[in-house]
Length: 345
Image (tube, rainbow, N blue to C red; front, side):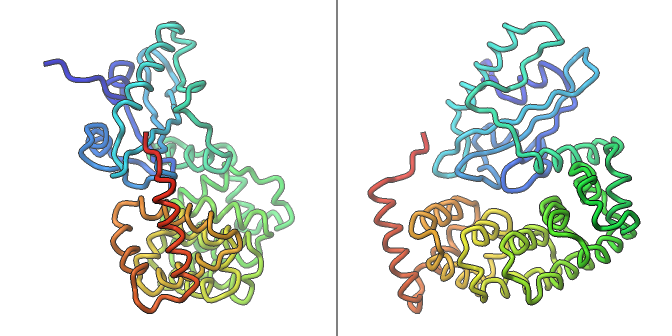
């Protein structure tokens, strides 16, 4: 019996050297066997965002010197698994593009169809930094200049001349010497390069020295919303206790009612919510958020969709001692879900 066409089979027929990268909540490689299992509807997407799988495919087309990169997204069903009909429609589009543009110079790129997207500049820089590292390629031409700047040799006011790609390359290639230099630089960095650095660090586990430096920079200065959200993101994957303490301190501050702060926690640092104390404080703050019930509903629905998060969240939502504000927000959430159930088609 003929096997159905899959994205991986399509890429294998076009070239080789296939690599898949998650482009949703975080940027990082997905093993090919895990992607096979996802396409076979055996496993849910590991980190769905907005009930979709966001990913990049990188492979080497036959007879070409440069790899081909597609940025694609696919809707997921209520279990977070692939909807085969959507994947099949995407394949039809890619096949049609391939037939229309058969010459090697104009291969299909995945653009111009409803399943493609273009990442923001910061996420595109992070993707290229991680892909070049994983493939054993040298960093970009901006790398050395960024390292010099982050070591303090060029003067902190010279940040407008530092390329974002260079900062992403540094974050993806942290050795001890670079990490120590970063830890020394973080307290002195102007606002813009600090935020850019944290956005790049969110996709890897920063060393303890870097996590501590970010935590100390935010001590007593949580009023800057953008730096607070950047700190959450930059320490999201850190195993150092200061990363967890930072989140707890933020949640105990009025800054935690800002939607930007809550969104950073739920979208980039959701593993912190596996701690019951942090999770319950987060939910209380979410109920008090400054954007109201629509933001509460959107944020909670997105978290409930994450594999492994539904059970602990429901346990906290049902606790008897929840504050009245949370009780009311949860009641309205379930009323709204009944009135307007999510569309997974």
